[in-house]
Image (cartoon, rainbow, N blue to C red; front, side):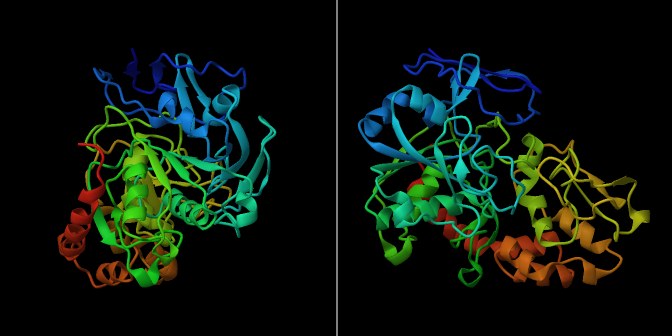
Length: 412
């Protein structure tokens, strides 16, 4: 049997499980935990991530040379915490040949946008091939000798969060080299809604490769099936894809991520607000980077100080070596106690724009278009449209996407 207890402000979720994989003796993942914000509760049917379902995927790895796309969230939960998936599989005599690391690196310590270098993992001695920098799609040479590639990364369900782009490029490269891809599914903490502007094809790129909304409401396994089913791989090719599903999870079920999915998403509030406050990444406004409240506040020195009773000063810290507005007094709002939302909220970016004393300083136009997926949102904000008017313009594309999405949903 398996029991899950979720505690407020715990360092990790405790799982009592019966698995064939014992502790490898290696160190557990060296990462900062996510701090919970939900009230104490006990789940009668605990969520079981696919990585823990070793009986479902170990037979698919037996006797094969394996490549793994992983980061600090790629863990198997144990009685006393968790061990990294790579460590556990090595302990089970799975032949891991090399590791591919996404944005933020294999151990998850690099800044957003910071180049991640290839090298060797100090914990295991395995070669690491970076997929963030010039090399975002593995070459045939980098895949040579592999029989299967396993993908296991915690996503947060936001289009410009780059792990789904890495997934698509992995699927594409493996298809070209005739290598199967095995995805271990994990819950999406923002799967309880679909919202936001839809990516326009002409603006697609690593911050959004497909014509999907900003928040798409799918697990990463479901999304992998959509990539395949909709022919989004180059040339419309199909990947030899297997998704190991979750157990006891639905799109509306709250899931507390026990490990930071990236350096600047430290807790449940930041993850929930990320789709909305992430739009500030395409502006000169600071969204909490350089503080301990990343994506839980916003502010800038060029915003009207008389409109706010809150201010802060960003300084270099873990995950943000060069934060926007570094060393400056930023006037804005503290959102760290915001209740869980189920929409992409524009209230904060509209507020910030309204109270910017010099509007020419606000937008980083190219960057904002890449994050929004369309130049229309910037035009709508600049023209003074209300949140309701802007969101009404999203609805036709959202309805179209929801119909397509329904074909790939694996969970109630």
